Structures are given as C-alpha cells and as structure tokens.
Length: 255
Image (tube, rainbow, N blue to C red; front, side, top):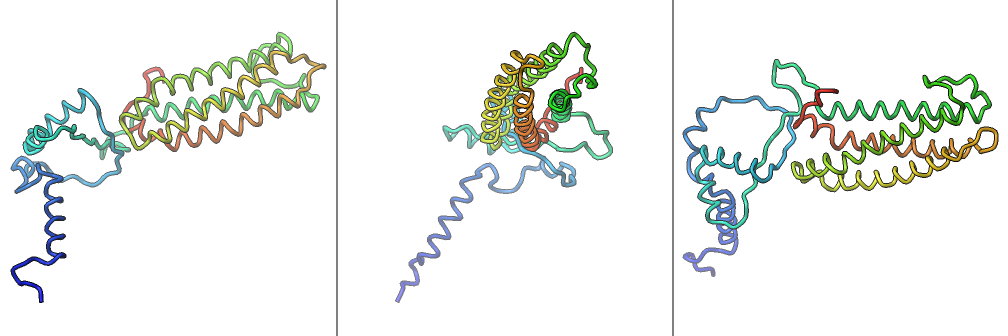
C-alpha cells in the first residue's frame, strides 16, 4: 500500500510540469501589471509575426519591460536573448484607407515581366508560323533580328536586375524578420539560379539568330520552358512574400 504522505508518481510529474510552466514565463507571474488594465480592448485582426533583431529588438524590449518589469529581471538572469515578437496587420486599420505596399509593387513588377515575355513569345510564334512581317510588339523596325535581340536583352536584363535585388537585399531582410520564411526564401533563390541558366541559353540563341537560317522553333521551345518556370516561380514567390512585404513596408515612392 502506498504511503499516504508520499506523493504518487502522477502527482510528482504534475507538479514538475506546473513548475516548468511557471518558469518559462517568469515575467508573467502574479497579477498583471496595472498599466495593462488601462489598455483598451482591441478587436481581433489578421496579422503576420516578425522577430526584430539588433537595435530594433532592444528598443522594443525596453518598451516591454516598462509594462512588464519581470521580463527585464529574467533577461538579467539568463544568457540567451529573449526574443521580441511583433505582429503586423495584413490589412488596414478599421476605417483607414489601404496603402499600396511593397508586396503589391512586386506583383506589378512580375506582371510587367510577364507581359514582356509574352511579347517575345508572340514574335517567335510569328517566325515559326511564317507571319513575322505582320507582327507588331511596339518596337522600332531596325530589322527583324535586331528587334528580337533588343527585346530579349531588355527583358533578360530587367529580370536579372529584379532577381539580383531580391537575392542581395530583400530576401536576407525578410529571413531575419520572419525566420519561418527562411527555407522558402532559400528555395526561391535556388529557382533564380535555374531561371538565370535558361536566360543565358536563350540569350546565346538570340545573339546568334539569323532570319532565314536559324531555327526559330528551337528558340520558341526555350522561351516556353522559361515562361512555364517563371510563372511557377512568380506564383510561388507571391504566395510566400507578398503578405509579409505589405505588412512591413510601403511601395517605393516611384511605384
């Protein structure tokens, strides 16, 4: 028979679990700070969470400690940096007008690139079908081969600049702010490398293209593969980053 004065295994485990629960949030022990009671009730809203780093984290943590000093005491007692989580609205404040965000601008850039690529495909479709003379894509007519080179190189250059900017600046910033997005951002960067390889192949074909001698069907095949991969990439990228960008940054002033 178990000694009544000796706690059971279940009671011991329960007590340990309760202690662990209390220890994980020492700043929340006891009654809530009086200042919290003064905070007006807020309606629920959709948001995306970010984890600021460096000076921004420190500034925000100071504000947290002003409201809940226990967090400051806990930070002194631990070697790890207590993270601060910031919730960003994914929509405007109630009654406020929606502001165009960075994510919206990215979609506009993608749409422009889609249009440019569609124009290239129209040109090569016409070459394959033998109706190139009647094709108009809004370009001057210095000769069919020169038209194709100009249009292709302008598109490829714009796409390369877009992806280089994302890899060098946008993606690293997003990965720091939203660590949960880091694996998807790495995957997007790998897709950029695949797209760049296709661009190089198309550029070489267009550079050496001679009307009446070169095979336009080969170029069209490469363009179709680029278009398919690029559309898949754009759709995935928009799914991953647009909401986060809109929640944290407005569109550029020139957009």
